[in-house]
Image (cartoon, rainbow, N blue to C red; front, side):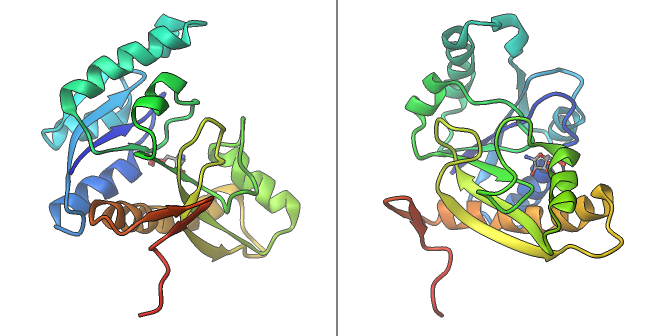
Length: 211
Ligand code: GRF
């Protein structure tokens, strides 16, 4: 299975790194065929180039107010790679409908909290962890989900929880969650590549079954 990974801004690409490693180790029956960024100077794109992976930059700024144009530009790049799965990994925007329609059920995202809490517009990076700390919750974690037309709202595939410690700051909590993000994303992609995930209404079945 060919995988396209999308990152945005100056994304550092640690989830991308985990996915590349998951493919290299054979855990994921697939290969990262393309990484698409919104800016040429993203460290994530450099990480991809270092691994010998094709990269493309499609700048949404160039298509400000023209969602269809942005979608068409993304689709042109995606069609060349013909991915079976698109993984958003630090892609901080809403994927345009044109792309979602063409790759329906084949787009995943990783979020750094336990959805449906602490998601939606503006909830990214340390904002999320700060909101968790302010809420007083004693657990946080990460969520891998299929992407639909709403922010952080598609069917949940895998979640992993971590404790919130008394002395946590947004960055210590982020670091604890990030470890789980890498493992969860690789596992979700592995299951998908093996055809083990099934959608039943809003529920994704196949990641949590009795042995
Ligand atoms: C992660 O925290 C992910 O949950 C969120 O964006 C961040 C990307 O980090 N969607 P990285 O670039 O993969 O290190």
